[in-house]
Every structure is written in C-alpha cells, then in structure tokens.
Length: 134
Image 1 (spheres, one colour):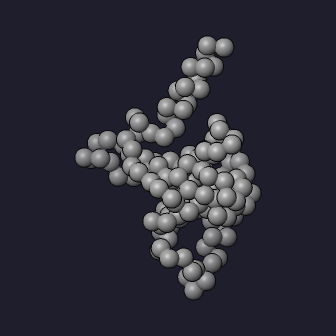
Image 2 (image 1 turned 45 degrees about the vertical axis):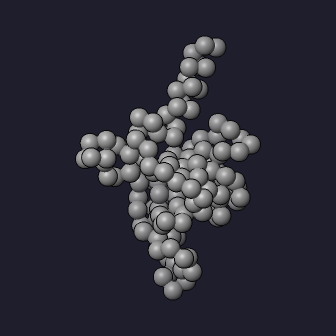
C-alpha cells in the first residue's frame, strides 16, 4: 500500500503549469487489468488508474512494462448501461512512459464492452480450460 501512496504523491507533485498534454487529465481511481498484446502474449497484470484523458491512461502496475510496448487495458467503468449492465472501457495503446510502479499509454483505439464480454474474460476462460485439460 505504501508504494501506491508514493505513486499518487509523485503524480500530485506535478503542477498544472508543467502539464503540456493536449487533453485534460482527470484524476480517476478505478480497477484496471492490462495485458501485452504483442510478443509476450498471455502477460497479464492489474492495478489502478491514476488519471485518464481522451488520449491516455496513467495506471499503477504489478509487473514492469516497457516503453513502446502495445498494451490492452480494461477499466471497470463506474456507470452502468441502462442503469443495470456493468461496463468496461477497453483501450489499446502504446506505453509512452513507464517506471517500476506505473505506466502511461497513449490510446490508439477504445470501446466500451459489457462485462460479460469483457476483454479478459474470454482469454482467462480459455486459459482455465487449457489448464483443466492438461
């Protein structure tokens, strides 16, 4: 927990005057799952978003990511479809900044999915069924 508090403290230390991004960042803390979508297929991790904009996501990480890696992130969205169906924001992008505790991606494309068809549910189910067959 201490490392996560440090990450948020580091993020908050940047003033708005130093921020040169095109899109306004919103300090949103939500659960996030991520996976590398090239080379190291099956490499998963989870964390929490630190901030988001229409162009990118900054989030905490369990496992190190490298700059320029293509990553898919799935964020459990706080709003529900028709007030009933849980949603995930699924985005694909390249890592533009990474440290031991956090990474930022520039979003290339995104979509909202219902949680029953979420980005990682299909992959995890396939992985579990392969494990049961072994």
